[in-house]
Length: 165
Image 1 (cartoon, helix red, strand yellow):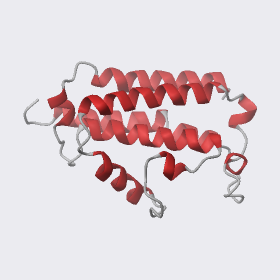
Image 2: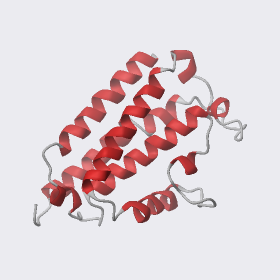
Image 3: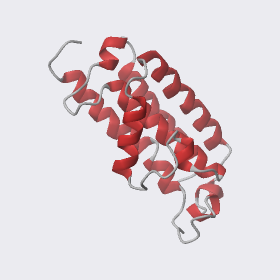
């Protein structure tokens, strides 16, 4: 996949996710779903992982970029729970600004990458992890369109679940 194709795929999937939430009011964005998370919780979660991806390709601390306290356990469930705990009281409109603003930052960061850049190993971008030699494109895919599609499914479940809208 070329960097241009990757960027197109990222943007298309993000636009589908953003379209899914268009027209939702604050109450609908804030209503908890069957798994306790509200739509806004999914959006802040996606944006936090986008910040992590920006930090990855800029060679910065990924957890700090997500707004997590130092010493957070390095497992996905613990990170996800910390993101939720930290942000669950954030008002819906603030979450929307964060979600959309973060994506604009990520899009700008990804646009700077060439096809050769996305094929470089993770360790090229995060020298503190010299043993991780898999191409960084896997992290880009996992924290963008694959992640958007996953959370679009959760959001659809919340939208379809009974309860006040």
